[in-house]
Amino acid sequence: MSAAFSPMPFWSTIVNGVTLIVMGSWAYFCGDSSPMALIPVGLGAGFLVLSPGVKTYNKVVAHIVALLAVATIASLFAPLSMVAAQGDSLKVFRVGLMIATTLVALFFYVKSFIDARKARVAASEV
Image (cartoon, rainbow, N blue to C red; front, side):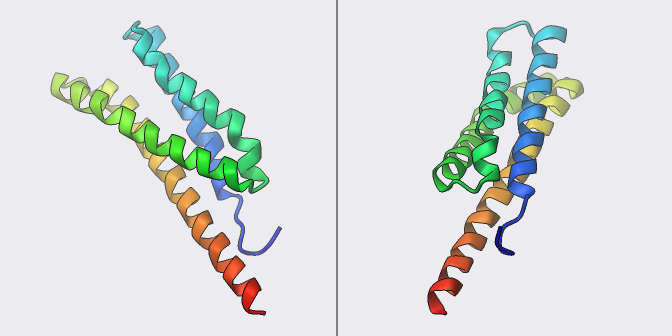
């Protein structure tokens, strides 16, 4: 592994996937029994399934995971505004935590893309 690569995209993918699964399951089983509450569970499972590709720095998988993160964030903003309007702080916490972990993961994906590009440019200059 090159010095330009970091394990953080992999670990943030794992943490994000587990967070989405746990928070989505909590919402479904302990509160809102709507099937919509299971969407984050499916997204979290997607992150976990794709995490080995992130760990091996597979470029295609890394871009799919980054796109999945953007889709996850976009899909959680409507529920966040809805639960914020209800004033239920526990629901706001759950949705906010899912958004926060996904944003952190997205940060590490973008950072790894930038680092990989810098390494590629540096290698081509030698």
